[in-house]
Amino acid sequence: MSPDSATNTDEPIVPAEEWVRPRASDYLWRPWYAKLWWAAIPIYWAGMATSLKVPSLQDFYASALAGYLNVLFFPMTALIVLGVGYARVVLNRLAEASVPSEPSDHDFGPRRRVGAPPPGFDPLDPRSGALWIGNPSNILRQYPRH
Image (cartoon, rainbow, N blue to C red; front, side, top):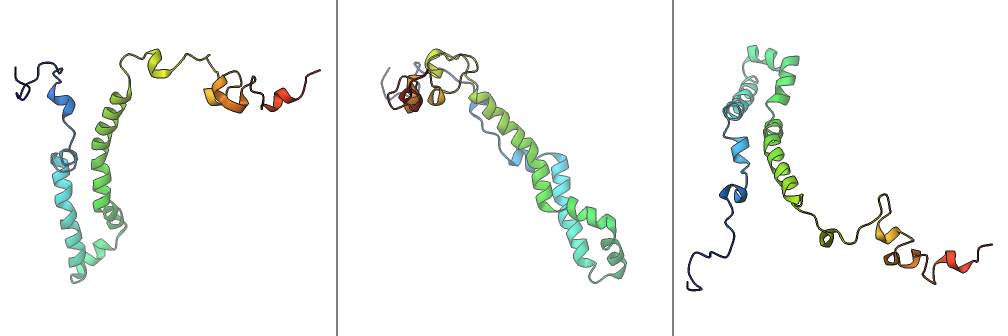
């Protein structure tokens, strides 16, 4: 097989669904409830603009119910609520990608005691520098114990 051929049999075949990145538009625009919500937002706000000229609408848009509807039909509210599904999928994929399939000693370094502090803060570990109990510059070595 020539080196400039389009197929390379040495590389593992990865299913296409692993490489597909979720699109925000699939969660913000595609569901029927998202389309309904986005369509209702300009209708509600157009009604509020019309209420400046029509006295019967002024009573409705001055009510407490309209105050709650202001929050419901605020575009950022729709964006945040509809974006939760997208964020959930992205965070789940990141969590799955960060979990190693088979941990090895090479990945995590030498084994530590359970409950031991990290190597930089462990006085029994030479990697902790001046904190190491065997280091001549450690202040605990400067004073003899009686």
